[in-house]
Image (tube, rainbow, N blue to C red; front, side, top):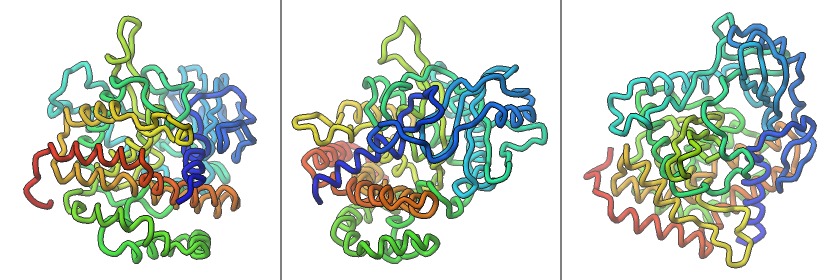
Length: 429
């Protein structure tokens, strides 16, 4: 795979897909493929629109000012000043998230928030048992989703803590190993809270990070099944001979993962766990190493996958500096942060040898279904073949190809060595 694929992948990761976590006051622009500003795909929120919405919420009572505009491209969102304080309002086009699609997310968030109130099983210091997930706000009718014409809305309480990564590009590394360790512990808490959430996987829809194609059995047949409900994507990848790419690039990674799949029980997972989707508890007297995660936000990509898939997602989005992979001599893989992140996770949820081996094998494949979902979004919703090309060639194929590069192999080798020190599970689950 050529270097241009890797470069497309880093542009997608850092620019188009995730945008930049910085909230801008410029309502007319959004972040594009390389982080530059461009016209948004969806119109920004307006004060009259948000005021009419929030008058139905007793926690708000209307809108006084739109304090910010999110540059992330898949929806429109703002922090809003209200008579009752600040809230976060997000608007989706119904073709991307309809009412039921948002309710899937809201039910998960409610469960996690409730489960985290019971801290009796969390054998960690009390100071770290903060409520890191807050339920979505409900209007006077008790509904967490509002609809108006072609739009769906959700209203969130403003996340507690400090947005330390407000000015950082998404998919860039943690500021320090202490942040990585705190993030690992927070993800373990999410996973523990999700264990009791026995709900089927989400319905087929845009922009969800699922795990079905490489979940076992015959990946070619599972790919066919995935494409069946996505006709434009099916035709697009057929023209690009997806079967040949699967056989040549992806199946060698799958054969390394396949022996460990029976050790991965299904679990509802965040699937977008990077530093700019967390807020932080800091003090002027503490160092970066003493910071704690105060809040976890944005469950828009959540689905029923497994804990190892979620860990792999977090590693790809926090440990590899995709924006710098073309810089000669750049250290783009932060192994010290990786070790700290895994150590934080294992404070609460130690991994078995089999799970650890699965993590190393999962890493080159975990992005695949979201990359396909994103390609379909660009084809079916935005009607942009240019962006679809970047999503498919740069992200779906390019990110997998990067793991054949010297840096990619170094990362996988490091994880494989780390796995050797884990105790065996003793048998499949």
